[in-house]
Every structure is written in C-alpha cells, then in structure tokens.
Length: 390
Image (cartoon, rainbow, N blue to C red):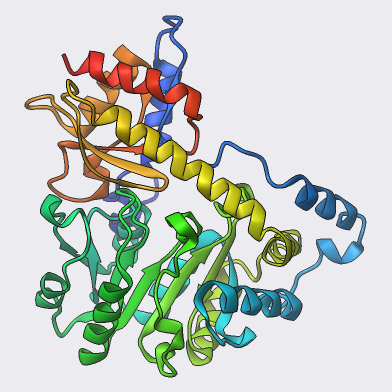
C-alpha cells in the first residue's frame, strides 16, 4: 500500500498552465504555427545593461551566499526610493521582505494572518494560484462573483456582505489577472476602510502595477500614516524587468507584520537569491525609461487586439481587458472552458486558459495573455478566433 496524500492537496486541481501545455505535446503537427496566449511572460529579454551588470557580479563569492532573510539592506533602501517615486510613499526598509516571486509573498501573507478554518473574501475571477494555496492550507475562500456589468471590478458592498466572524482578509488583484481590469484608487480606498471596520486585512496583489497606462499612481494607501494596520501588498519585479525566472517577488507590510512573516520566510526559502536582489536594485535605480517603453508596447498590443477583436462579425465576445490580459466569452454551447480551450488548440493552434480555473461558474470564459504575441501577429490571431466562431 502506498503512502497517503493529504486530502487537502489531493482535492486541488493540477496547475492550469502545466495542464494546457501538456495538450501541446499531444497535438498533431498540422503545420499551423502555435499562437501562445497562455502564460503572462514577457517575450522580450531583460535590459542588456541589466544582464551586463549581473554578469560582472557572478565572480563575486558573495553572490553564492545567503543574505538576511528579508533581503540586503541596500536593496531594500533602493526599493524604498522606488516606492517614493511610484506611490509617493515614505517607507522603511523594515517594511519589505524580498521573496521567491509574488506567489511566495502571498504564502507569507496568508500563513501570517490565518489558521486552518479561517476565511478570505476573494474577488473573482481570481488568480488561480491564490485559491490553490488557500485550499492546501485549509483556509476557506469566499468568492465575490464576477459581474460583467461592473467590468470585473470589485464591488465593495458585495465584498462587505461576505465578511463573517471567521474572515481574516479581503484579497484583490489589480490590475487583475485574468481580466486586466484596473481597480480605481477610490475603490481601493473604500476596501481598506471596510477592512478597518471589520479589523481584518486588505491584501492587494499588484504584480502588474507597472503596466497601468500612463503610469498612473495605483492608489494613495501608503500616504496614510496608519496604512500598515490593515494593508498588506504583494508585489513583483518579474514582469516589470522581464525577470520571471529570477523569482523577484516582495511582501510589503508593517514592520510588525514583516517581523512575524520572517519566521515563515526562514522555513520556506531563507532568502531571495542575491543575484535576484542585485537585479532588482539595478532595475529600480536605472530602468524607469526602459520600463516605460515596454509599458507603452504592451498597451499598443492590448489596444490593437481590442480593436481587431471587437470589430463586427466575431462570435467570441470581449468581456473585460487591460494591460496583459483579455477575458473572453466563447460562443460554444454546452461546452466548458477546458473543452473550448482544447478546441481552439486543436483546430486553430491557439493556446489559452479555461475560465473555470479562475472561479466557479466561469466555464463560458477564456483568458488570453499578450506577453507572447507581437503586434504583427495579432491580426492573424484574431482571424483564427473569427474562423472558429463560425
């Protein structure tokens, strides 16, 4: 008899991106070039000056050593300066813990806040890794439903109605993965006020905060002297600097919260790799213009896709979009998102993710990501959708 697996992890679905990429391996070669709209990974390389800078550091023996659990002081000081530019924030290095991607930052936040049996109110559609983590930890996700009428944005009244005496936090992703929708700063402020009223946390995942058109300030929460009492931010530099494989995440919270989160950090990862920390430091100190150029490029991709996709004659319907993503309703009756995504792969060589992995009742939707598709390929991609919808 083989050993037993935890029923908590056994009941969690397999990682969706790994699942659909297995489909590609099984797909017959029909000569049609694959259009990959599956994973939100920038198709462009890191800035050459960043790569050159890191190459000069590799011979330093310190690069192969541990750093402090929370990250090197000089790196966190540089991030403080970046937050001053980005948010008008006056933060301390003690407000930051550098992590192995935003996903690990999320785990740190959750295990610092919650026990098994607690609840988190989660806005749907959600980033699929979040409820997977909650389920594994025995924490109950309570889901605020997706509303097309609201453009996929959180409705504060709906979220507040879902709070119970077991609720420990509200979780929102902005810009949203999967819809691309950007939660307005005023709404974020209202959500923090709700968290304060109920003495819980607002967890805001801002992985895509550098892809807001016009580089607008996402919110003003850090200007509140008491922000750390009820606000926890999940952040990432992976998409910002095209460093997804470096796992350049970050947890931002009060110094007290970080103090306790470091207990979990030490048992999970010890520290973010030094080479990643040096990449982050170089990025926040030198690459604002490079980031701006890529932001504008991603905006052009999104705008062109939206224009082509919404022209008359397409039975696939754009429900929400922005930045890296489009959230699309497929036209196939009695067909799940998985079945629709598999059909698109088999018949049109388009790879995307099914809606049901982003929340209950979302089988009619698909997530498309613009990281891997260049502007010149967008018209053909949209034409394939049009031909599939006939």
